[in-house]
Image (cartoon, rainbow, N blue to C red; front, side, top):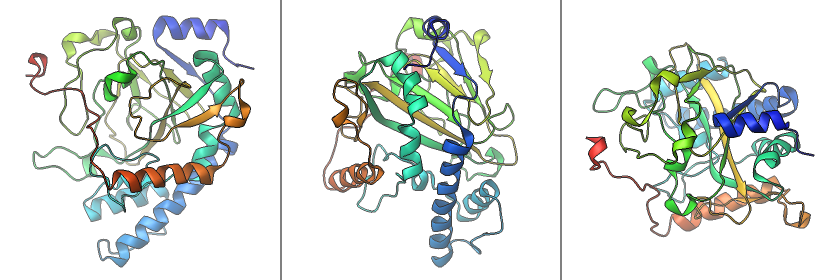
Length: 323
């Protein structure tokens, strides 16, 4: 049965967010993901070492320090290597991604889906706008031609703003949680409570931090950081304005952001594969095989590598508020 209380649901509706402490079992859900990604990092390190792009595979370093060293030495972020989605542009037949079984088991975790069901109902679609975020210390990451860090604080935005207009009427729920502690120092999420009440705001493209909302549309005095521990889960509406702080620590900040919507509603990136995560009406339609999920992404990559597709961005830098 849905696990969120009436009080929690009222808070979500009123404030545009809900933080649930200790929702995910760290040993059952979080640790297997961490273990799986150690293998992904092993593969990346071996490839780069064999290609002569790094001096060592750095097997002796812990995950965050190892990834940071590889990023610094190779001069590349390698974010796509770990992501369980595809990039919005430039998809090739060999574009890397990771859609492993531990990630799939997390997306389809029954406790998580109980909470999701409380908000979007019993017919749940796993929306393909989903990502792992691995943010190394900002002072150490490579810079672009303007001297800006290639991974930095995430700009203020709404998740509705990063998808196509076809999903504007969809009830897309964001589920954000850290795999290691998210702190003020290492770049935890920050939100503006009640910002969802004003609907979709104009976004401006450009910069390493992604799309951004001009501050004139926001109540900056209401901005609130959200430090979190592994196991905590933050639920956001598609219109809740949020971003992240910069990672000023000595280690990687690591998080997942997942999205769900009622089955049948547009996802905003329908070229990417979603799936039925839960169905009370038609349980046979639920995808339960992580291998089949990985194949959905592999087949999509192979198809999109051969054909042009409409850009996912709806915004223009020429908008008056973006000047």
